[in-house]
Length: 377
Image (cartoon, rainbow, N blue to C red; front, side):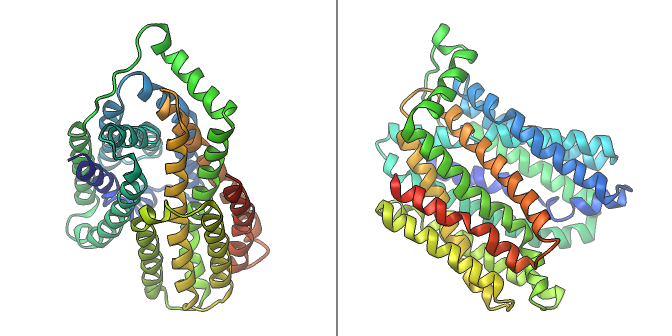
């Protein structure tokens, strides 16, 4: 029941038909590219500001409560976009969407690990979370596929209603998740005490700190580069109508990586590190090939990075010994957001001087250092 509910939650959390068309909604509402970009900044900053505080809230009250509240906030934002399309309403929606991401991040992993641990099945965590990640990727693909005919029939209202319904189903699914944890009471259970304890564990425990850094860097770089895959596809010279097929190939690779996470968790540290380094080489080679066939290598690399991120998260969960598990996990989430922002900035700067393929190769180079870090753990 626990595992199936986690998969359903991950699926409906990503089954948002507005994803492929919301930039069109902004354009039709008269927003400029600069205004649209500012909305993305609002979204990112909201998530970063609320990431760790929301993790401490999850540890103080209820992880399940936050997992329910998050989709409701996002659904409210999507409804406002459709009903009152304007810049400031879009901005409010992105604040709500950013808050949703912060509320779910940390709470989801903490609840999953501790409930599996209660059942004596914590060794399954990497496999379960990998499949949950894959469920989210499948939901993305299905939502994109459905968005075209739904939008053609009912326009923004139809895709908006479908997105809000998905959020409501996601929130209802959260209520079906078990939660047997009893939050601490008294001074030790106060919000400020939990927040300090989580930050202290992430900062002073060497093993936890190394795991936090590994999660942040392994997941952020490829996650940010994923946004630029369409540009890489166009650069190969294929017709624009064929670019979605190349993107689909990459998604298949990432989905496969999630499904293989359980087996990858049993890899020795050096083998795990070598796999990351080889994936970086495959990514660089595929990106710089300038040929559509290179996307096969990119898909393999994305799959490896996906499973590497899940394994890194599993190792982090195993090293957390305190009661502020969601807070510590949220610290890793904050690190991921910061590295992601750095990749965006670096990509924007480098792409003005070199090709997209070369930019990809440059930005995966840090994975060699990440591999060395992973080998030492």
